[in-house]
Length: 185
Image (cartoon, rainbow, N blue to C red; front, side):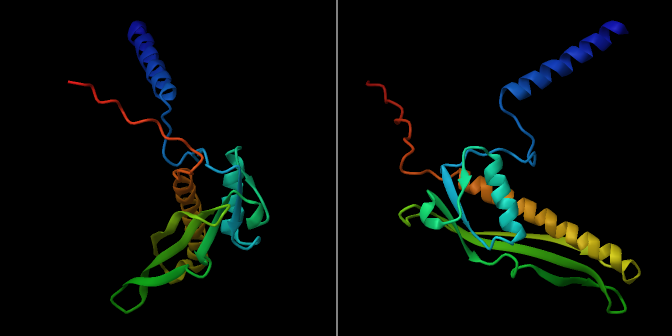
């Protein structure tokens, strides 16, 4: 029995080392992205919760500094639709008496990324998220708190999706590897 327990521990340890050695990370681990810009400007109001979260994520990656002016930035995130105004709450389902049973919460943004010269590196990109929420008149306060938590969750998801898209940008300064050589016949 002790031998099988030792074998099990060794197998788990080997699997853990293998996965961590290959660079595997769980989705949603607050991933770290290598952004292609030394400095970035975020075109959202300073007081915007989304701007605060996005700037925190950019700074957390370590290689990029957030600047206060677009002219001082190597990369500019230009927001084309105000995400605070695109939050919506629509009726998804009614009960037999015509009372709301479920809502659909939506949150979206349209943004693009420009370089220092104003050249578009990432065209207008729409990220739209939605979450259903059950509703009950008897739990009004709890449902308001749940709604706020769902919007916060969507904001976090929105920032992560923006970070992934920005990290995927190929700038002119990045050299691509040469194409594979075709063997002569």
